[in-house]
Image 1: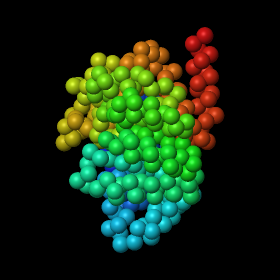
Image 2: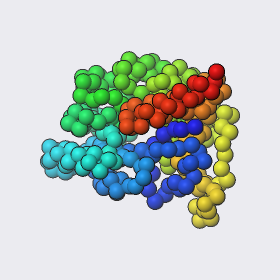
Image 3: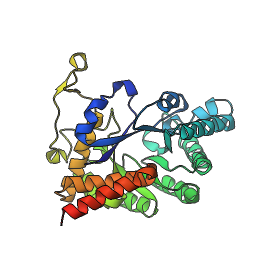
Length: 297
């Protein structure tokens, strides 16, 4: 089974040794503000990152004193990351109307739209955020759909109608994590997302699948947990969403869709991820899908 882990947890918090047993081959860390990029550029191995500004941090453009200079600094950083083979997308950017106390909607909209220019200049896909802002989000994406090749609206928890509107963009994928699986209504929405248009993520250290979530009965993979003061390599930190928990997201997605072959759905989602963020790995993803298809006959 091969899936993508996506996370914005600090690197020093993540127990990467647990990833192979969860079937994770690639890690994508998304940055949320200018100051978070630099450490991500110096990751090693199969760890990658994004460059962009989260909607709740959008005021940093104006607080910098010169929004255009700030934009150019982001562009330079993105180009440096591309040269290092580490930056694979622009984001996390979008609109978040649930947290307007951090940044007003007019500022969010202005600099969300501005970041499509980063995608256009770098020819990178986009890693997108949408909370309680479906109509404005869709309108901005519509105006700028020719500026980016593809994208994922991550941590999706909107309605089926919102989801359908996003899927009307042929190059848009929907990202699912624990926050996408809280309620029966959430599960019904996820059930309707074509696997070929889906990605899965952890969004760690947040957004885990909790015992109170509607999909918890589909979870099969469990790890012993300990308080962080007693943490050891054979356990996870109690109360923290760990990278390996992406396996649980996959199990809930497969369960609510009635799919018994979890490896097959994992390979399809991995193929989606490679198509958008890691095109150099598409051949191996296609081989995995073909092997899965042959094994099923």
